[in-house]
Length: 167
Image 1: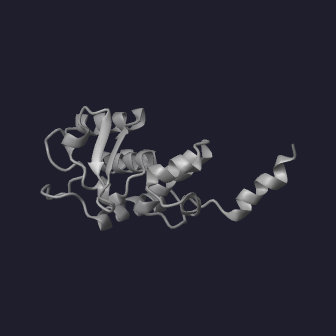
Image 2: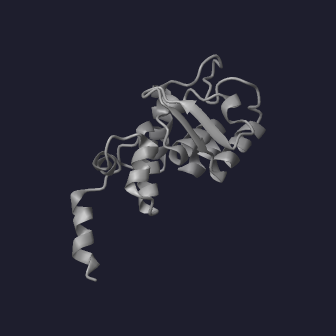
């Protein structure tokens, strides 16, 4: 998916990379400006949904994608994911079309949208061994059970631990 987006449109590629590596909601991603990310090692935003301040380091993958985007000629100030008109960011609907369209082109049949980016972040953090409490805090969920359900971890998968551990 990354390769397809990168070949098609560097802005859309950056949207995908930041989405899966930050866990931000699409409403927060779309409000990012070039000034928010240009030359920065950290991202500091106020979440639109919760009003909470969120401050976190950008991964090397994110920083590289940002540099590539800015090197492509997108160095002026303004919206990071600006629309063709330039005076505003792309809409949530347009962001959905970008992500869903790319998924369809590469042959994914599952329901894929902008929220999938956030869920992907949580899922791969969990699969990588990050404690569910940490993921809960990163995603601002109320309880670990909410986070597990959110990232698609089922009771059957948790039950498998008991069945397969056999110490």
